[in-house]
Length: 256
Length: 194
Ligand SMILES: [Fe+3]
Image (tube, rainbow over all chains, first blue to last red; front, side, top):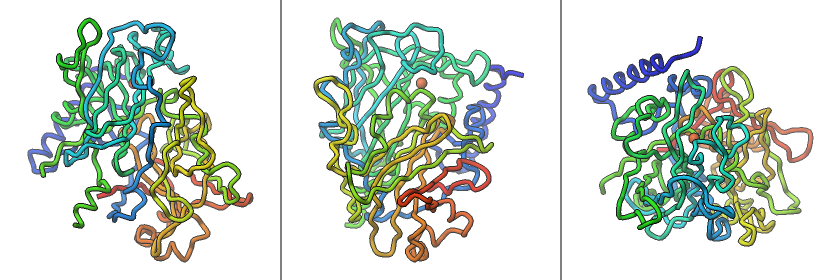
């Protein structure tokens, strides 16, 4: 028996209600999704059942240091996904820009940001993506950049399309861009997804809804920013990213 | 200092494969180094099935215990835009390997150094479709039994759970097996950092 959207909606609503009830009872906010979020069916057999073991890191802990990336790890056109082929990709050209910050608001400097996405038709350049939408010979959908001294980053790309998946009957992912981020400590490592404002698919998507906290969910949605739009060229979206977890600098300052 | 709300994690999804892995992602040891070790294993789900779409990242100290790393893990060619591979000299301390169709991954690296009072280990971060938030674990090595007895993490664990963090030595010298079980029997110990 295949699951309907209605079945998924009911599970999503139950888990959201349970979260809101726990918040009303004084439980702390959950910024991240629970790993055992059943409406996202792939999570069922892939989350640990034992509690995570807490580690109190000190400044010499391996995980409070992190790999470093430099100018040899990116090329000059990696941040412009529309210039990686001989022709122009199809779709709506956009600029996505913002800052990478730690939870104290300090910029994360010179670290690697990677992104990947579907093309304008909602198709990934991945052999296993069998969505019958056209591939674009002028678009791969992979970008990289290093953050600036103020934590800033900017990508030029194409607005990705929504695409179907097999979580349940008639399941569609809202348009999104996958992001991979490094901080000043390995504990800050983050892989996430950025969404576009006012997408009508938000309510139907168990991956976005796995973030049960309303304000945390909003943090995954970029803002249309007219000042980032470029005349007769591209539309601008702003998205700041805040890394969780202890950072090496936080520990150092805490000890001073 | 006002704390900003962190950006929530999301799954890496099934289609990262043409974006995140890079050639030589598991070849951390500089070319021709005499002390190269191989660390490999499988990732399993709660039904005991291998996971063919997980992504494993490893981060470690060099043989002297130095954690400063070096850039150049993903070294790119400014002429073709493709990958050049690591320069064969610098030790970046970072590996990134996808699991294959049988759920297997492997890296060639150098044995990490450690500081007094701690056993040497490699830090591991696991991503996968179905995993909404990555998981951290550690690879410890079977020959370091004296250090295991005093290591703050290992010493705090029951023997059967501790075992999941210690790689198995294989017949080939310098080859270690480290399986990762996301759920169920012999579930790997996963860590959180406060
Ligand atoms: Fe996706």
